[in-house]
Image (cartoon, rainbow, N blue to C red; front, side, top):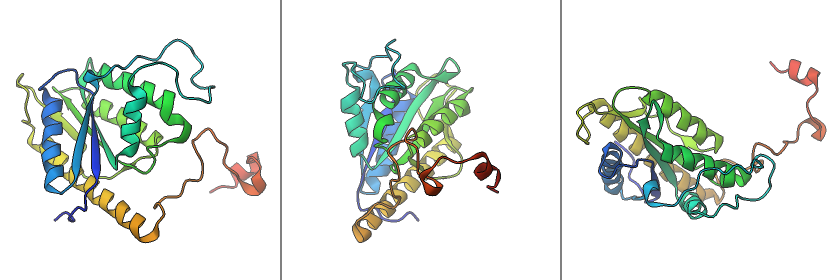
Length: 234
């Protein structure tokens, strides 16, 4: 049985353009599970926001300040940073990630998240909806993005790949639904564990040793590793 929840907020990022589609159904079901555990689900439907694609400025990898493009992404990033956990939910389009989620991941990541990694140690989950093909590839892409942002992915069995070949939106994939249920409960269990640790110790479970992966970490004597250092690591 899952541990009783002491609350917490999960933010679902809905990357589907289709109102009432499979992705909407999946998030609604996750919301019911979350509510039963005494936690809260909030949803960002990307289709309802102004999200500009990355511009041709070309200085994303060298700039030291957030992106200057004027759209809704900064406010959405603030919502993400205030949540205890995030579920990225998106359909497969053209054998890849739906373009709304793709554009958002690029803009949010390169334009804002890369500077201080504010999503570090937040619990992450992924839902991919599709007809039949390429859902695992899309899932793998989002996994890499969550790991880049130093989030915590709780293994819960099979990935949440919800397939529907009927042409009518809905939850028809029994195994996918089971995976969704397991993922949601594991996410809430981890959120509860992290909150409990914070209350007892007053400190986060995982210490922050650097701001982001572009900041050199101190090594032996504060110097960069030599070829010999690398060869002697077993």
